[in-house]
Image 1 (tube, helix red, strand yellow):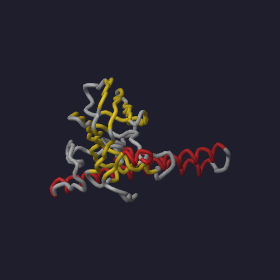
Image 2: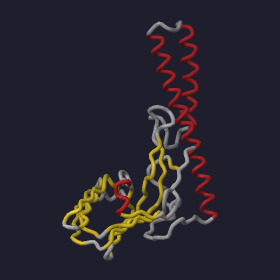
Image 3: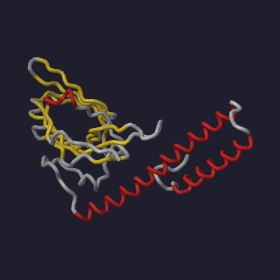
Image 4: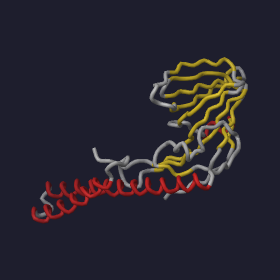
Length: 226
C-alpha cells in the first residue's frame, strides 16, 4: 500500500502555487467575517496499480478559511439529493494589492476578495480508494482548526474493520481487472494464429471460470459487475 509524508499541518496563501483543490469535496460553509469551508482535500493521486484500473488517493479533512472577506458574490445550484459540493478549481488574481479569489465548483462559483487564507489539516492524510472520506472516519463535519485529531478507539476500530473489507474488495476487483486483460490478450493471440485452438479454448475456459468467481464474490460491493 502507498505511503504519504505530510509536509506541514497549516497552509496559507504563500503556498497557493503548490496547492490544488480539484475534486475536493465541500461539506459545509460558514460566513462570519471569514469564509470557511469544511473540505476533504486530496493531497496525492496515486497512479493505478495495474494499467487502466482506478486511481487511489491520500485525503485529509481540512478547514479552509479565507480571512477578511469582502465583495462576496456567488451563483450556486445544489441538488436536493446531494449534501456536498465538489471543487473544480480555485483561482487567485492579485489586483490593486488585493487578493481576488474565485472558487469554481461543479454546482457554480463563488467570488470574493480576502486578505489571505489558512488551510488547517485536521487529521493526517489517509489512504482512500475514493476521493472522499467516510463521515465517521473524518470525525463528522467541523470547522475546527486544531491539527492531528484522532478518532475514539471504538470508532477507529469500526473504521479499521470497514476499510479492511473495502481493501479486500478492491484487491479482488484489481485481480478481476487483470483477468479481463489476460482474456483479451489470449483472444489476440488466437486471432493472430499464435496459439492452437485446443490450447486457446482450455486457457480461455480457465480464465472465464476465475472471472465468474470474482464476479460472484464482488456482488453487492462497489465493484459489482455491470
